Image (tube, rainbow, N blue to C red; front, side):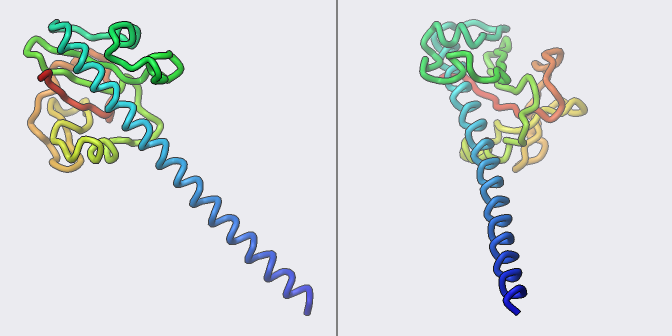
Length: 165
């Protein structure tokens, strides 16, 4: 009789521990997605600041240049070179700035980017089969991404479009 009671308690404790462990894992994964989306937003702001100061077109700017110019805060992991440099940028001849991932993030961050951008139509994904920005909220936005052709943007990469002020 006591054996059954002890076994039942042990199973209950093991079940609670397993459930808590899964919840913690989900929370950690969600925090990683939030962190990556905020990192992209910070990178985007730095690129916009840089192109406001240096009015150049048909160009990209490196992490090192962003950090040296002061556009990217020195305390960030991106400026210190300790972050995986997955973000890239390009400003076309018309002045439109494209912020995109040069390699796919481990998690899909587009949903979180939509929240960070306050449901902006300028956030979406690059699809090799489409020539326009694909938004999780608005579908095909009809915003052309032809400027990214030849830039080695992976299929499904998050893209966030911007303009200087």
